[in-house]
Image 1 (cartoon, rainbow, N blue to C red):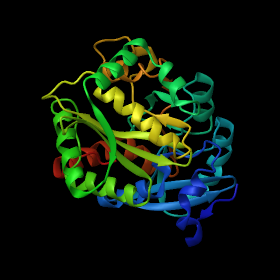
Image 2 (image 1 turned 180 degrees about the vertical axis):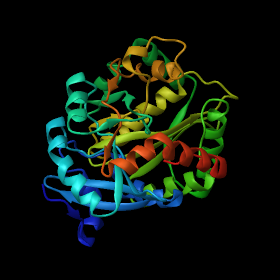
Image 3 (image 1 turned 30 degrees about the vertical axis):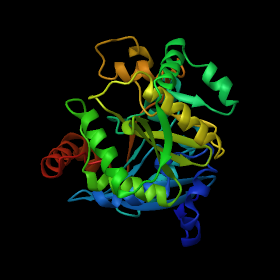
Length: 346
């Protein structure tokens, strides 16, 4: 297995290269996602292996060395190909002063898959991304047929939103709309989950919009924004990266109608797969006490099937340093970073 750094020409067309991976690519393997991570101390590293491109995020962890993270990758498409990649990745990383590599490939959650990865030397670790379990929509068909496939309650809510005069449209990702979205996101997050700074989100959203790799969709009632989505796009795949809705004015079906608008917009751009980005595990879908029960109920209204991925693993490159990282280093790094910056280390 040959692994090398990508050339400047390859990096310039990186998203196109990533979309040719066996898994069709992933928005979190896109160049814009990686470059934005510089704002939180990560340095992008672009690698090319036999048949697969890898976007790697790198941080230096003193005194252990460098730590690599391959968000939502490598995109090998199956477990056997990932296992074949690992020896070369370990050797290449060792030569760059790396002590460990975190991977979270979108492979199915299956004991045989997990067993194959662990037998190849990967170690199961805590998940980082919100969509290890998620709801994925096939939007390759006719829009009318797609909407007809939604659950009855979701279709009812969409009709109610239309009747109530909810308007949806794509809007500019300018400073004003970023502020509107962030305030709505903060309102949604209050008491439920943490968010990064407005400066970070604005940079993230606008970087993707400039590259035509992301867009805002807003839902309005009487001119007021009541729901908002930020959609990321890479090749034929898209992800509902950020979503928010007002808690001050309940409008039945506004968020559901916004997804219809998002699907229509994505289809016009050749997207065939739409990840709603996060759900409870399929085994917990009916558990009302699960923290993601509510969002799971909303998203399974569009597709009742929850997709569970195999999860997140570390590849120990330097075993002694990596053991120290897992036992003490990671916990300390995450705690100190959150105290200083009020956000996730990752």
